[in-house]
Length: 87
Ligand code: FES
Image (cartoon, rainbow, N blue to C red; front, side, top):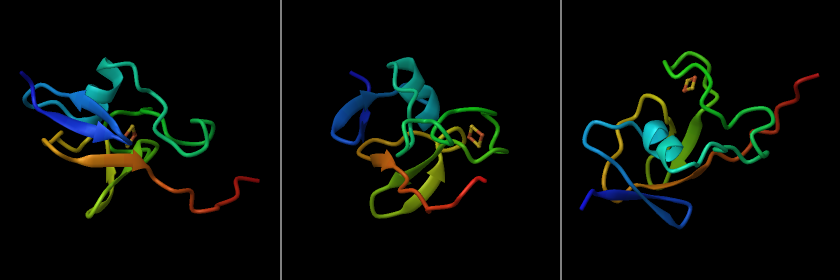
């Protein structure tokens, strides 16, 4: 049985060496943001350049899901919006 982390309250199993983003996408979770993925909250570049995939790790802070290796027991959620305007 593969280890798992939690996206909000949903357990997500991952394979050894997988990033958080890869594991989430593999199970069909593509919307990572608090705004329905409209402005950010998507895996876009996949190489740590765009910051669109930032998620909150309970007890640790924000991380880039596309770069951060999955670890058993992580509690992840959308990163709260900073209230920035994009006019
Ligand atoms: S998808 Fe661009 S930094 Fe993660």
